[in-house]
Image (cartoon, rainbow, N blue to C red; front, side, top):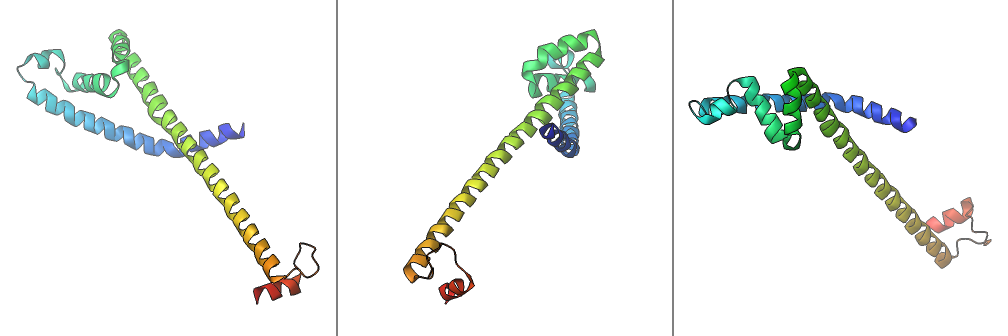
Length: 157
């Protein structure tokens, strides 16, 4: 359960960024839809794909952004546009939000393992170096593998 809480909190934090990214995608799609509508005037493309702005945006998203889901999205939206919109929202949330969050989690786990391994190596290096220094200088006078204050101060000199 703690892992689920962490994932949900991470999703809440990432939600704002994901929403702005999706808004940016909508703006870019709108701009390109308008360009395609203007450029396809009088051609077969106008009647097939770019009749109006909503249909042009739908074609761009279903055919370019999500080409694998295009036929399914078209089938759903053929029944009712709400089904297509709902499926589109689900696809965006599941693919872009959840899977990218999973990628981020995996990267963070690898980073944490790398950091802990580096810390273990650093600790072992310091231990080896100090033990060698103690043995070279004979600072551990009573040979108990512990330095008292006097032995430590003599080692530092």
